[in-house]
Image (tube, rainbow, N blue to C red; front, top):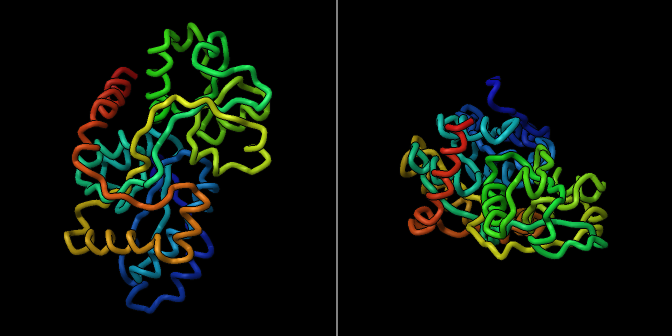
Length: 280
């Protein structure tokens, strides 16, 4: 196993594979990857309906991949190690320049939020002065956006507020619920994917910012017909019971086609990520 990635395959998916026709089992597995915005187990559980649906629809095994951190994920992504990838917008812009065909982004908008406890007096960016804000990986799209937004309100990280490093966006939310941080960086969809008892302890402060949500990309080595098949299969996912349930539980709302204009608008964030990585 590469030290840049983590790979797990669920027992239910294995059962599906063994039930496939022999000709399907001999097909090369499709490598499905999701960026590590939550724990590996949580990612597997969340995306298992999609993984199983792809196996049935494509009649080939589908292996699930993620990575221990964002840098490891984007390194594997840009190295072309994945066939189908779900990733943040800034990574998607870079991947589109390195052999991937952008297919869809989720219909729900990506809106960076600060989660606080229900009884917190914090109401806006000015209230974050002197506070501790839980945030996931420094290269996460919403962290880049949020640090920039707080900066536009006169707050500098490490000087006017402290960043409490957490491994995932869900971890940032949990840190607030447990009283380890005054606020936690998250999104509406990430908040929806935590336990209901945690959700009820929190409210959110909106940044007023909105972006296309996670992108789905296919590597061009799959060929024109392979990518067309994937595009149709993914479009049909929203019309089957397991797909409707997936979009309801995650809050993603469905798929929308990516436009060239969206990629152009997101390019500055991809360039900022590259500058951050070069300076590391």
